[in-house]
Length: 522
Image (cartoon, rainbow, N blue to C red; front, side, top):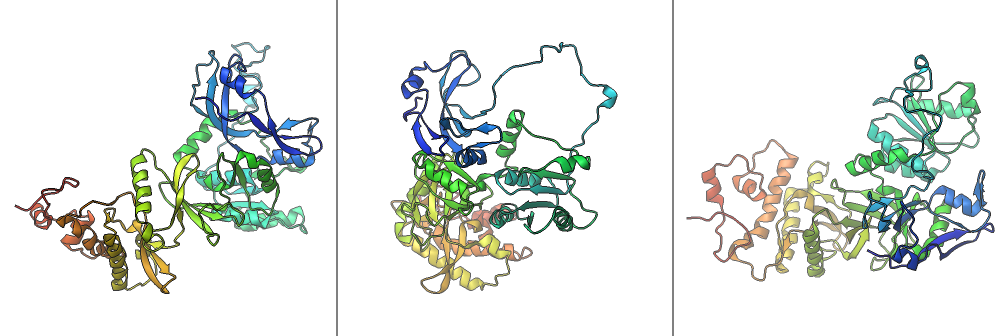
């Protein structure tokens, strides 16, 4: 694996100029490995976030004691792939995906004046244990920027309750409310003093006896008042030892931070990315640079428990490709792990059923990449799946719903398409704008087949589907009812039918069919 692009960076200078320029080492040095010293590897950066400190360096020329005195390269929230390894390195290999820790100046160090046998340099009777916080503890988070939002999601996952998050920006609080619906938001008012603000915090927590057990300060603050009240304060300067835990928490699915990504930019558009990140009215929470086309979202919503389907609310100035200008949101469906063949099948199904797009299936806008994975870009049909419909207050007549299902499967049959994945979640009741009525649309097309010749027994797949789905729907709406043996068998939910009864219900299999195992009538 070798890098193909010139090594470049985003620079600023004391005059607040922001520009892209060549960086060291050169591409030639990277390829031949001459830039590496002992213990080093070369990483090709794939993604880089824009930190608030990057914006401060650009706009204000520095942060505290750190001042921009000459040309300075930006970007320290980066991840990429190892492309070169020094022979002395044994813990990493070419192709490894890594995140960059930019603050390590010394890899191994110990105080020279401490011998190995020392068990501690403090009096043991003066050591006190700081107890871990417990589930149900109330938490206050000050600041709804990227760090505050990450803390919000972590506190939710840890079981904190209630969680109050405050900010001076109403848009950020609105985002926080959508990000964690259980959070209680508090807008900081310019005309109130500290006591008034504190009183509103306590009120939002639940009253006088509900002060926060812990407060997370994510904005910057004058800490002398904390000292006067002898409030314990714990600083967090470096986070190297937290990387393994953070990776475990993310990979486990305990928290979902993907919705923090509101904008994506190609590297060549880095100046525009910085403009967006520095504009409080842009709706950006975190800006990610992606080598490729950009799709700008003001909000990202996870809508699938398997964490592969997202709703993107589009920014008005987003590059659209094939997406209509009138679309306000799209659906992104990522390829699942080890589902390459099914992903290809679904893409083929959308292309084959082009005549049914927007009518029976969503529009297919193309294939792209999201978060490093192949993804299908689809229209947002804004429907309710039949499983959720069965538990809702929508009293749609069952004969109407069955008619909508029959119409959808009739249109699939006319295109010589057989749909096997007959689960309620895969059928959405939507508004039919053209007729001013309602209709059923089909999603999840991995198991859509297009046989060159439909065999006699295969006709029943689409013909019986509406009745089978309606049996499932009635079972969900009224769990105590008894389904017919035929419907149970067709839906695959039969756990009570006797073996002899199953044989009676089994379809006749044409001798030429080898695609589906099934029993035959004697």
